[in-house]
Amino acid sequence: MERQQLTANLRQKTGKGVARQLRAKGAIPAVLYGQGQEAMPLSVNTRDFTKAVSSASGINVIVDLQIEGKERIPVMVKDYQAHVIDRKFLHVDFLKIDLTKKVSVEVPIQLVGKAPGVKEGGILEHITRTIKVNCLPTAIPNALEADVSGLNIGDNIHVHDLKLPEGVELVPGSDETVAAVVAPVEEVATTPETEVVQPEVLTEKKPAEGEAEKKVEKKEEKKK
Image (tube, rainbow, N blue to C red):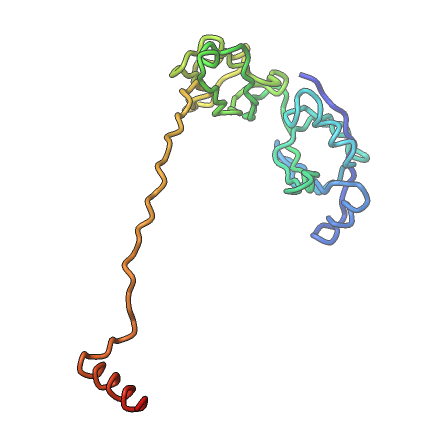
């Protein structure tokens, strides 16, 4: 498990206004807690933090955090907030960890191999993309592999089918479907609906036969 180095500065003030000022200066507001540590407001360089979590370990990377005037301490990213559009980090929660105690983390699942069912016309669906595991911080895998090379149409792989590295355990109760090969859905040709011709409705009232005859007689008298 790789480790990254990161420097943090103490924050004397907190609040939305201070956070906006920090981001404008290229820093991310952060907080440190865990292992009996009282919540400590910090800030870290945006570029340095982004680089640290862009390694193969991703967001699960162990960070040796150097806080001004203090010794380096091992931490992990417990939580973070990112912009909904550009995905830039807005806030980070660091968790102080004990390298000798297990932690619970989300690990990505990667599909490997070629499913025979796809050659038969099936569709491979990757349903569960991450899974929570318990392990020592130094034993966190970058990803878990799910081999789909034995999947025919109608077959699937569940979480319990995954091969876990030594020292890595699934969180109890986790048995979601990871991947499945499903038959393609046939498109049913739809018959266009026949347009129903509505009968013409006459809204103007027709004159009675007697009235019609009187009108004809009046017209003839005028002609005379």
